[in-house]
Amino acid sequence: MAPVGGRPFLEFVLHGLASRGVTRVVLALGYQAAAITAYFGSEFDGMAIVHSIEDQPLGTGGATRLALGRCELEHVFVLNGDTYVALEVGNAELCWRAWREPLIVVREVVDTERYGRVEARDERVVGFSEKGISGPGLINAGCYVFPRNLLDEFPLGSAFALEADFLVHAVQRQPYRLLRTEGIFLDIGIPTDYLRAETVLRRMI
Image: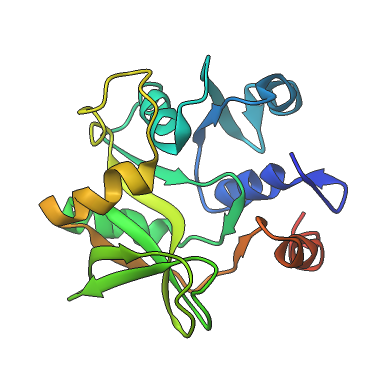
């Protein structure tokens, strides 16, 4: 709900999905969930909005596991709520249908130090490096295409981190396709990019 141009940042994320043909979104909510449900309700920009609310902090993985129970299709798009990615949804859908393997969306940046790196081989993700490595490279854009049952090994209500507790091990066990995005990428986790969002995103709505 951090304001950008007088609107919640999440509004830009949802508007971007609606403009790319998405018709139903499940929001994984915890802290101050009531503020988000009150603002967006059950419909936004032509999309059905479903709220998956955790009773206690579950981490990114536990919250995703809980939200997957509210999804309806065999595969889902998973995105971070504090990152704007102009994802090529149609292309991602075609890739899923062609490969039927989990997809990790990556973005090439000039300096990976803040984010950590994605290690890739033959267009597959094979590992992740910690933050602190400078220079150009691929980063995790915080966006995935998963089969709906991917996290079923974790009990509902268990707390875990999606990347540190699951993905770093999962990419060693089975193929995870790499999907490159060339669109706008904004992670508002630091002040400079939060300020950049004011100029980049406010023109979009």
